[in-house]
Amino acid sequence: MDFQLGLVVAGLVVGFVVGLTGVGGGSLMTPILLWFGIPPTTAVGTDLLYAAYTKMAGIFVHHKKKNINWKITGWLSLGSIPAALFTLWILSTIKTDIAVINATIKYSLGWALLFTSIAVLFKNKIMVFSQKHSGDKFHKESRMQNVLTIAIGVMLGATVTLTSIGAGALGTVTLFFLYPLLPTPKLVGTEIAHAVPLTLVAGLGHATMGNIDYLLLVQLLMGSLPGIFIGSMLSGKIPDLYLRNAIAVMLFFVGYKLIF
Image 1 (cartoon, rainbow, N blue to C red):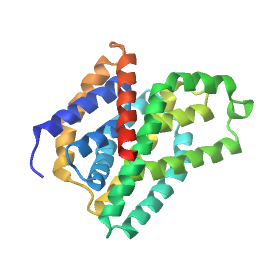
Image 2: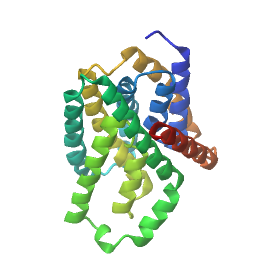
Image 3: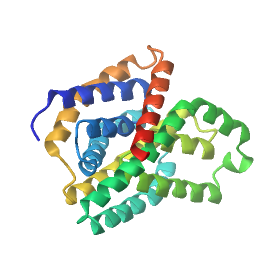
């Protein structure tokens, strides 16, 4: 593909929104790439590597602030990495029928966007509910908690590999139910630490299948890196409630359109 300034601007806008609100970049970037006419397989594969590179800096920041629970990250990865590899294997076995893959990705993407929009819209209420109604068995580490964390990892691994969506909003919200007493910054930092190896493995897997457009990737990063920096600097200074709600509504309608 040729250089397009619009893709750089898209990266800038998405990076700014992610830095400002914390809303997952994949849930915004992949639909935008589809709107630009990028094939679903290329959009998902490129977005996965895009997410891996942009979130790597987040690991260093959150680790420095001690916002990462590496034990939880390990349990999540124990489920997500094998699930990602298995999903990649399934995609590789049907790669000769590109129409089937594109249709599967668009349908899965639609459902992922619907669930993500609900997670974004009701995030605060979900947090309060989980803290009030979680039993004592979730207040301390337990075998059940570890098993459920692995199960969440499996769900995220398959969803992220297939659609590039879910590592951020869906992952964080589901963890709220299992770890209601863990401070929000640590949940966010832990999910970012988990998202990097997951998106990197999934992205490299898509690369082996030829689903990466490297010029597209460079254009997105040109915009997103300064966008994330600017958004992060303004985070907390600009009320983001209305912006979050608008994004959630937009994601819901895009997801609905992709499915129906």
